[in-house]
Length: 426
Ligand SMILES: [Fe+2]
Image 1: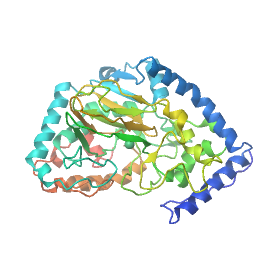
Image 2: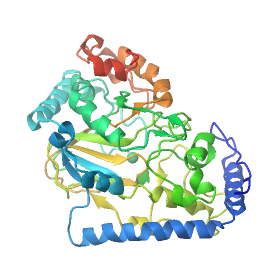
Image 3: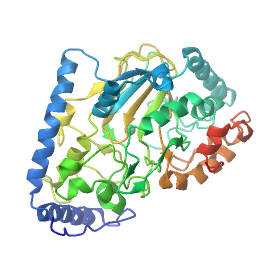
Image 4: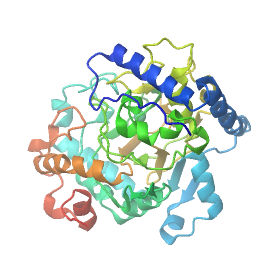
């Protein structure tokens, strides 16, 4: 292959965004063209490869068949997940783990959280949303900016969580290009929030978007290398499960950022939720990332536009630029308290709207974020937030828990918790 022109890169948010977008788009087009294929040709290949997958999902949806793979926790724990199930996980990129925790345990955690926030007068002191990403209606929040309850920490450091995280991390190629990119058996403890949506709630949901980054996905050197096959004419070799170059680089700062590399995003259900009560949906096709990253390079998108992607806002996906993908938007099945739900970190997802919700909709957000240089860099700030009861630095500095006496204590950490926070080196 001829030597391809190098790409300009910005390791921090460019000062002049439209100029940087114009520059990177021209450079990406030039690089792809120098490979001997046009951008249109490369994008057509991606479309041709994705179309049958989209058709398969939308046909299953039409027939009312389940789209999301479901695996019993007992099979993950016993190592008896079949090769056919693994193959399906790779194809769909998402999973419900049935019985990840005992139902009674999850319901107890839910009660414990209520006691924790009420006992500390959270609702009386709540100052409103600290960001507008999950803009809340009314004064009582659905998303609780609470990170350090005993319930959350017990779940995060539990053997059952570690077992599922290791299984999910293991679906990724963590050794490639002559390097070991992460340790699948050790997770970094990534503190996130809680959602408790009450019975009778009306919610507009959350639009289709993705979370791994924004303009940095095209603009940082690490992401350019991670997505190298999309930008050098070898799109057939692009593997959404290859962690190469994903575990070291920066993400542009913003109020919706995630400093760590997550193999999967996830949450654990703390209430039963029916599939038609405003639940999570995904486009269950990990390889759709190729479409999302190449689409802005086509001629019908203005030169200073990345199909609406900009910094400090979730990466939007939608009908305007990604109509093919939207046909495959598929919701989770009914879940019970104690089940957990997972999706590949690059996948498009949304939360459906609901009116007069039946039952509660309560979850703890706990992802799979394996130990790697990027996550190791974030760990000291997590530890500091834990020690002081502060909000982690990826989130608005709301700091409700600093004075709460019954938050989880450092002496209650087990080995998994200590490893996850970087207090134990192995
Ligand atoms: Fe998201």
